[in-house]
Image 1 (cartoon, rainbow, N blue to C red):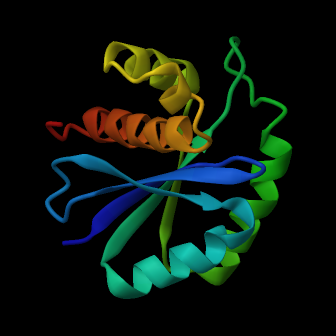
Image 2 (tube, rainbow, N blue to C red; image 1 turned 45 degrees about the vertical axis):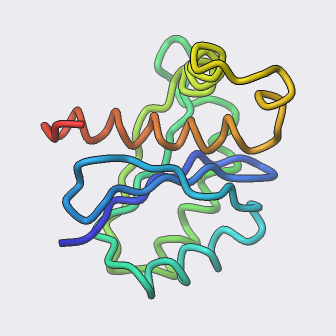
Length: 140
């Protein structure tokens, strides 16, 4: 049984999260520079069984794809070309960054910790993955 990997795609860096092999919990991985993301994914998938990659789909308040999709679409094309047998699923990621910041405040993160680049991206990826697992009926 393989893992599910989630990506919070950004222009400079990407948050990444992954489940355990039983798909019970979502855990953040170190943030990856966007320019290194494909290399990271290939390397990770060569070492760990991954059944599916979830990519956050940014939407506006009305549910329409946001402006950020123009950066994500080319990545999706490359991902599908480089990993043609991988199941790739887009998941609505509305408010995940806002929720991530709120969770950091609630978790007692100091202002300096909350400002660390990548910390919110990692947490957003965990939120995307957790939401997906809950929507699929997994207990998280």
